[in-house]
Image (cartoon, rainbow over all chains, first blue to last red; front, side, top):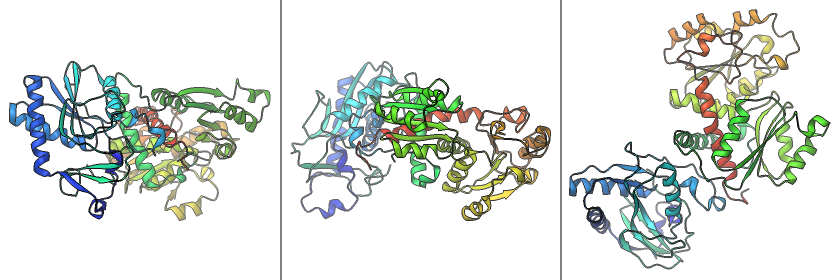
Length: 210
Length: 314
């Protein structure tokens, strides 16, 4: 995941002349709507679904998907947050940060179809950690993955079921997702040059506040 | 953070981060699967030269729930009882390349001294009459669970201040969080030289418990009378101590009359009938068991922040 991207202070984006916008606000909204339709199609309805967002921005995306599913199918899909901090495999290479809340809907995840939601899929290590975290919480019937952006460069055999946009990138580029409700800056997905450390956790204090 | 030796080493941000982490760890305790992989491959030694039930077991559980290997060494039954010096004991342990030493020792400053000798992270789990920082964190955590943020809240710490490391760490952490702290003790158990500290840190001193309770503090922390550290002469009889400074049934009523929301803490082990009556210890206002439950979560948070981060962190 491109979490290191999130640590850019607000304003850094404007300062970087090389940043280019690849998804605007309406693009993001259309992509989410399509993902919501795909989830329903794949699931043949919205029954038994649980959406689990991975902090920070996955939580906001999961909440939006749940609203869209209510609109499309008229079914209230439970939403939760799944923090993966304690499950990372790179803890020893990062300064520690306080874990974010994990909130599992009261219906639980046992025998449900869990859809993990995150902003950017990169190395796949965040999703590996999320799968581990999930297995401590119960046994879902199936786990699917929805991401806003897939930027490639997987380091593990993991793929997304629902992708907002496939974005070919170089390792030397950074992908930044800004969402209203999380960030102060306008909603966008941008790409800029500059090394990214895959799997670096975001610091909400520097990126966007929840 | 490399060591946790004194509550004074923790800034307000550090305390807030540890308490926020502890809250998430507390959630983990309610799950069926309590194991996190966070400290896999790390080794933690609990080196206890003094007796302990809750501190040692909660450090051990905290380490195990985060998948660290935890080993307990007690003074009795170790080579220390054959006359080995503290330095030789910890150097021996350090030579086994452990990652963390949790130490309790009867000498004030022992944890600080050990931290100079070893490469491992050192956690002070109580050094003589000096400090017990994780106890202060769990007390703050427990009180905040019931009272909300402690800034501006009034906390009274009552009892044997002279021999209490719990009081020293608590006074520091509570001030760090912005609470208003009143210290209550008989003059013989008020530490010498506390006046300067109290003046510098804004602590209130008194020997009138009834007056303090009548003012309706938000929390009352009763300290254990540490008879093992006393060589007599601090108070005439236990009965007289109870009359002046015990949280009796009548004083419990006075407290709840003055502030219905007030809570009661005790770091344990309790001398029932001496500094705290059974009525107070088992009252709805008592947080004694919540404190024990929080102990594991807080110690998980401490171990996480000491051990999980960058290997070459400063």
